[in-house]
Image (tube, rainbow, N blue to C red; front, top):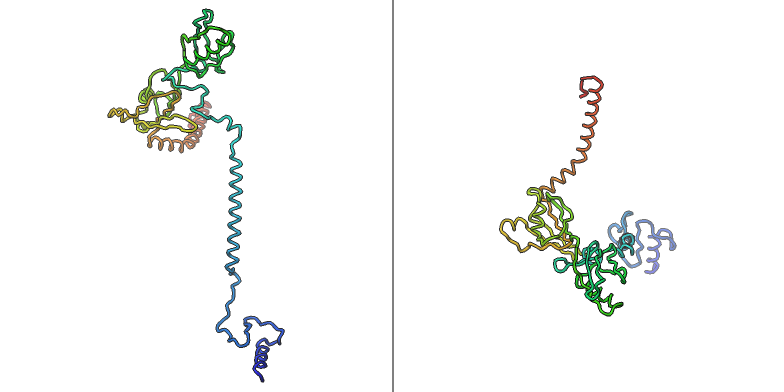
Length: 311
């Protein structure tokens, strides 16, 4: 038998079903002239996943998580987008009042202030006016004139210019300004009570805190805050009231300006006590309700004539 015939016979004998049969389970398709592999053939576990399939599954999972995160971020950003009306009414400059200035440098007019004006060339023009809620005053021949926010010199210049439109010679002067008190604020552990205070004198932060009488036990006088509010560049300054009392260190004894906010914070132990009080407050209310009910029952028992207490 030739070599080719012996090879075909070996292949047919291995398959056991002729040329068209497929190898059985556990059998290898051995080409002629090659040795059969030794040892058991490698087989995949039913629970095992090929590396390429695992990578594909992880990639799809990460893509799904990323899509969910982006969708959630988009929903949150859409829901928190500020309304145009809100942006319209938001404060854009300073404390937020319409008429502002620095009364420590030069007095300015605001709503409710009084002014007395006259004309040097017109003896009949002598007016006492009050600044209305819209920031204007009423003048003869001129009607409602806006003056709120102006200083004395600005009022004189503006009114002289307005009267020059109808008169040849005019010079308006302010005889007297009567201003309402400007205010600052103080909050925190103060015995005199917090809230708005009139700024009617030359005050420093030491003066303002001393007038408010900080609590000697509850107040942290070493970390008093002076806040000057602003929508763009707010300023928070710290003042040590105790250091000035002990050694006279006055480098941070800031001058109080209009709309300043002073905060006298509590000590750590005071904050802890407030927290514990808030924690047990509901239980105290329940006990008070129960005790009140029992006392009412005891009073009813006495009114009924029975001397035996229900307790």
